[in-house]
Image (cartoon, rainbow, N blue to C red; front, side, top):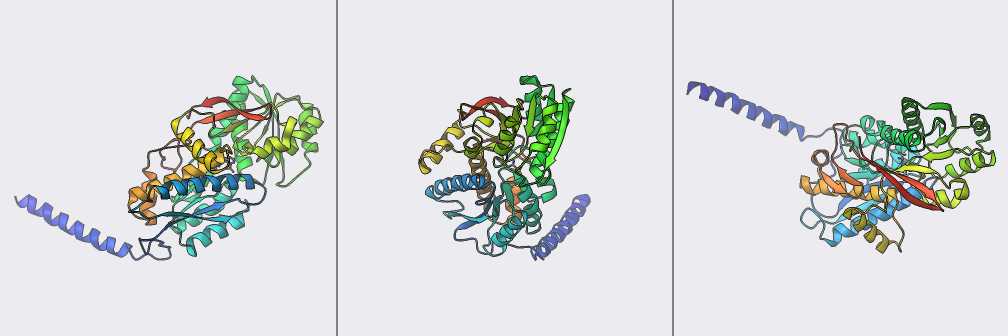
Length: 393
Ligand code: PHE
């Protein structure tokens, strides 16, 4: 009995102390709390490259978010009938514009969460700002490994990571294409391009292959003949091009002109209608790793395809669209589960999600990354064709 009283006394003092501490911690210093009024539209910011070198990515993403916004609001919104409102800022895939955009959305527009941006470079610049301001951020598409770890504990992503993507490409090259020799050509100014190149090189060598050339260029370069001439000498089986759709057609055409016959392989950055439009015969027969395929018969893929096509004149959604939709959906689900737009509580709700979205099932590990599989797409007769599905590992 005496012992029980003592336990009770200790417990009471612990609880009182906890209460005092909790009281103190509500006085936030130097952070932004964008949930002052828990009524009205729920504003979520989206930072996207709507202009510039990868504008096709930003436009697809925005189209998908429009579909999501309508779906949620037509069903009556969330948190007792509040509507969702996505507010867009263009970053043109330039890091300084990405940081300006996220700062403006949080400080001036008072958004409660952030979707975006698309590229790894932009997200590496934005992440620390989201964490410092305690506003949860989910990028649908940034695959560079550092995006979440360097961004801090408010930064999540809805896609696989480049170490997995590079390994998938290398394994496909060595196992399926039986490649023994590979060359790599990448943009040294792009976090995405460099990270993916590194992953491919170590995995291809790990599988017993030889990387004869691992060469670079600068962002915006238009002439790759010097590097390609060196590559030509080695008569490689595959040429790995971890680059976005804007530069790949230029490289592919110059490679063909020089007589390079290697199979070209890329990553998710190839996923734009512009790749085939501008690359034509030069990209025919190439392969790239991607996140999703519209050929997938899974229910959530087919539902999304139907809704997006109905809204956008029959246009087929690409991976950018699917992943932007997923990033938005995850945030909306987390806000619903948290029952509030409070940044810290929504962050915790995101961390604990277990959702099936368009690109698969998502749970987050301690570094705020999902574990996901991939698909390999072949460019055949001027079309993207699903070749294989690769399981997560
Ligand atoms: N993974 C790319 C990056 O990190 C972005 C991207 C994703 C591009 C999906 C196309 C499709 O920069």
